[in-house]
Image (cartoon, rainbow, N blue to C red; front, side):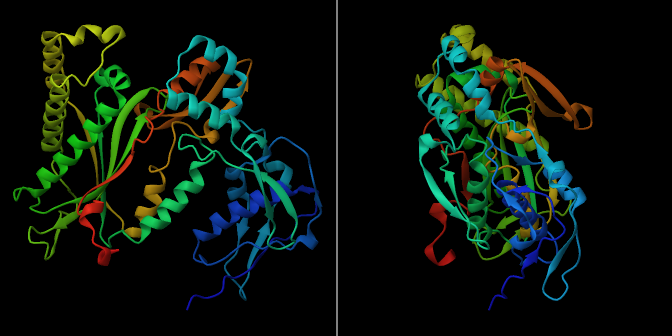
Length: 424
């Protein structure tokens, strides 16, 4: 029997607080407390102690970093978690910068200069209309004071930064029962930059080849008795962007550090500090990808335009493949880490991310957009980049996936066809 959640009382806030901000703080404190030892708690505000005034503003957001730094939460005492200090709420209000504002402001100019595919146009319009009257509304009610407010519906487009948070939470909850009580390894397979333009012209085909090349590489090497001698099961997530929003297709693979024996009777563990040999992974991945790409060319599945038009000739395409075979392809593997509780938090970083979140936008002024990016070549330092709005939108739309394309896939013994009803 699960214990009833303990109430949490917010005290010490005497100023006038917009109700939207109050509820935003409630959500963030719930997340904050759920990561502490008192993980079975809900936030319940004593509304009689807080003056509430409805403020008609466009959108108000909370500076969560400052909130988490300044709010002090004591250990549970008598079934309560007390908020010891919360300075002026107005200190946490920040000017909202959202992707949809950029799209709306540059909509006429961008469309006059660009030609969009159907998925790009759909994402563009969905994000602009997200949580506005255009998509309808519903009523939300406070679970303590019973006050009702009208909230606009979400677009639920998988490229919308505002919709993917809740979608990711639901997905992670459903996947948590499938995690194994073993360490996991994180392996990333990246396509070289020379393939970027070809991939943009043939998104569905090239991304499918990427998934297939990676899955065959991991399953083949893991099955080799010289390396692991077991059948892997893993999850792969496609990302197509770099921190600067440039096209950078790569697959994040989260893999249990081990696998099933050939007769599926026992678990075969990998080495503690070493999963699979990087040099072997890199070489086989390159070979399988280029072999599948060559097959797609022979079957006339690839389209070429712009600077890549010359690759339609067989001899030019063969030279292109030889150049790619001469390159060292990038494969990164993190040593096995944690268990299921760590994996859930790790998955949240990758599964439902979009090219850029609203939190990375720092300024929108004079048709210029400034955003934060992490420079991996400079010790992961946070830096700022400014682009004109049209260029920014163009970079964002590079990462719109084809309609119906599945970007999260399971392989090996985790593939759906391998799981029987009794194993759920």
